[in-house]
Image 1 (cartoon, rainbow, N blue to C red):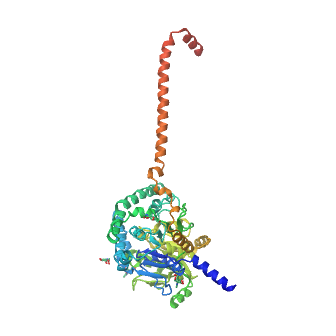
Image 2 (cartoon, rainbow, N blue to C red; image 1 turned 60 degrees about the horizontal axis):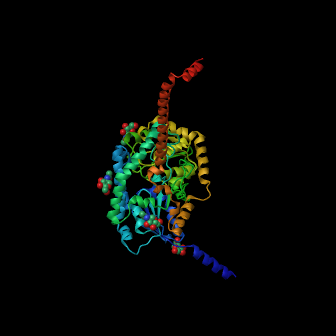
Length: 526
Ligand SMILES: *[C@@H]1O[C@H](CO)[C@@H](O)[C@H](O)[C@H]1NC(C)=O
Ligand SMILES: *[C@@H]1O[C@H](CO)[C@@H](O)[C@H](O)[C@H]1NC(C)=O
Ligand SMILES: *[C@@H]1O[C@H](CO)[C@@H](O)[C@H](O)[C@H]1NC(C)=O
Ligand SMILES: *[C@@H]1O[C@H](CO)[C@@H](O)[C@H](O)[C@H]1NC(C)=O
């Protein structure tokens, strides 16, 4: 009996387990873009899938035998500039720079021998390709392997992407994550948000897509469909959002929210000296980091001095992620390091405040550790400004403009957020809301990936609206038709009216001298 049961269980599990070949493509040289998907690659490989990932930050975990990582760490050499310098550029320079940066990243990736081998080798086969949603040339992998495409985003997808796949992204209700707006938009902001739609549509059509299409030709070869068509053929879009932090918007069934601290790791022990510092900081600790992309060492000199002067006057210990060995004029209560185990530092009960550039992953780490926030957004072409605007409007902290950091304001902001318990209480409330979900974001991501594999795609979940001509989608033909009919009706009424008036005048003239007319006239007048 037991044997029979065993055999049945084995058969059932064999029937339901299927090892698929999965290709993940995450070529952005930025830690926050990578770390969100680590649990996904781990989990998929542990479930018996053969996972190949092109990544700039391999986990190198020998226990994950079914995971092959193609190391693209060399792409970091493309990201060797100071964000503070970049911010001094004009909008046009920023757009062109953005285009060049992303084109260079893909060029770098697609030139790699291991990647070329994947493309050229006739025996390679994948059941699903999972690509970061804005690396559009990499969508060609799905055409190369004639398999479904899953799009990934380590933060919210752009409003352009939402609209392209037929998901509502209203310019007033859901402004793009790169715009520094939150909640209620002023008239100027609403105008800017509409302008942003036109700008992105235009730059994609005439700059980004042609550049990326050239990369497809260069590295994959000719005969590939247009990127827009592969894009519209996507099966799923995994976005790292949740309903409590990001603005509420209706989502298509094939847009899966994987947010809510998906990247968070289990707590581990802090290095001993750091643990001691944190334990002994009786007045509390401020943790200050501008993340992995923005470097504190690149702060302009006067800003850095204002920050140091501020810290000098505070009773708190400050841990500052600073990328140089030395920081002149540093006061005794400030400790610098090129790297801190951020998640575990934030979990320490003595940490009273997190000063951050506002990257999504950093904010989630602070919120789940119940640490209130001061945001100093830096990267213009990112979600930092809107994230911080959200933080402020939801009452989780305050924000400062890095170009205008003055000791008095900075100090008063720090003291306000640390001393007023309403900020930490609000953080706790939001953390509880985000974590109260029927399943984790990771669980959703894994389940829907296997769903796509099981069914060879999910074309039935696409919004049919994508295939509509825009004038039909926006009802312009209906509005035009109704206007036309109304005009015809109005024209007929006016014409009839004019004819009636004219005829009645003729009749009146003829009748004027008649007896009946005079009689009637006399009657009306009296
Ligand atoms: C690797 O995948 C196989 C099935 O393809 C599975 O039996 C095995 O447990 C997996 N190993 C690891 C370490 O994930
Ligand atoms: C960045 O890297 C590129 C190519 O590797 C190099 O040409 C450029 O000088 C570097 N820039 C800086 C600021 O280091
Ligand atoms: C769209 O996807 C299906 C499979 O999901 C595939 O057969 C078809 O060739 C794809 N079309 C394009 C243009 O990529
Ligand atoms: C140290 O601070 C003083 C003023 O407080 C300033 O004049 C000096 O330039 C600073 N030194 C460095 C190396 O920044």
